[in-house]
Image 1 (cartoon, rainbow, N blue to C red):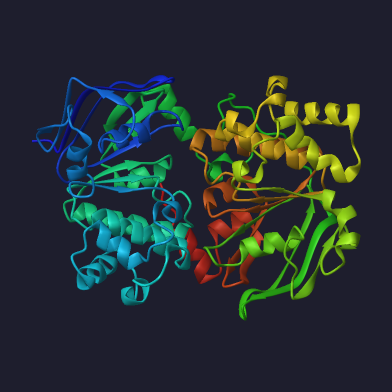
Image 2: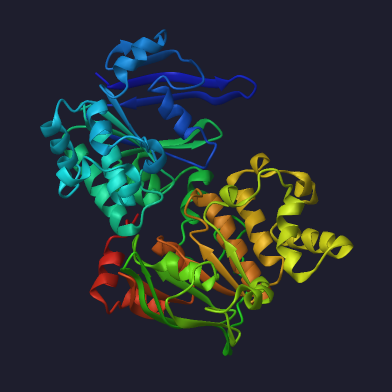
Length: 516
């Protein structure tokens, strides 16, 4: 008997209409099934229906462990949540209660006593679990938080665990640890429903995959068969959008076989020079002796696990954090450790593309105002500003009708295009991109990466690209530096580093990359 047996599932929302259109889904005890597709394809909505969460659901057949749930009331669903089906979300920091200690949350999830809570935390690979019980979520690293969240999901030994993008925001080594943990649960006999846009993760964990698009399943089958020999054009499109070494210099988004425009790196012109940067927080070294140069038109990737110091370096380059010692030069001019009144005229020359554009935009502003405010320091106003905003929106392939839209009216990909337009509008010499595509599904990520490459080639802008996704770094950048514990452990041409890494830590990072 199937653990999950659904036929003809339809899900609708008031005022929106139907978003899932008659799909079938079966999961056998101990089986691992993946749902893949773009944002808005219906993956998460389908998964949440197994917990009685959200939407108007109707189906020809909908059973969980043989029990017909089509007429379940809320009290009936509460018997299923946690006890028979566990749920692991993408962002543990927002999924865990920030006001309750880890031990309390594991106890709420089903741990019978302190010994049981310790056993659960230990089972998900949390070291020294007794020291974590009294801590709050914000006191744990990203990897430990995600492990704790998985602990709460499996506390009552559910037959099925739903993992919705469980590794998207994690660096590659922590991602490997979480995948190892989920794989161990699968080996122990738990069924797994995995929702992910990372097809390499799907290839590792799932035995069967369903490809969803616009609320429908367009392809289904054994994972190895679907990923190696896709039949549907949309599945092939998803696979082609994955950045790899082979995709360097080529477009990822479906625009034929056109190559990207060639970049022109002017090695004789140093845009950014970082000299022996040091930074400590509360007495602990965060950055320790970091130095590098970045030429005009060049893309430099910075990689490393959480806590390696890469974001601190980015903040110092942006002038948002002052180094304790060392220097940052922008086009040969001192940019660090100077009064803000001296730095302000230089700020337009370095722009940021953040990971979360929605969090960095004023929700009250229109797109025209969001992009235009980056021109304030240049004194560009009136007709000239309006023309510049329209020009840069056209460059990021957003029609003029978006000028009066507000952030929440836009999709994730459109918001990221607005963020890129805002960064390029002042025509900066340097752009710092801090995890700009980590929250995007693979097809939108492909469009954004193509766009960055196009604009960098067109404007000759230097790009400092910080990412935990090594495939993206290999595809986009010319050189890379690898950081660990606040120090640079390796630096060089990106292809050389990937094919012949010198540092043991670099080899460890590359070995941790999941592959198709």
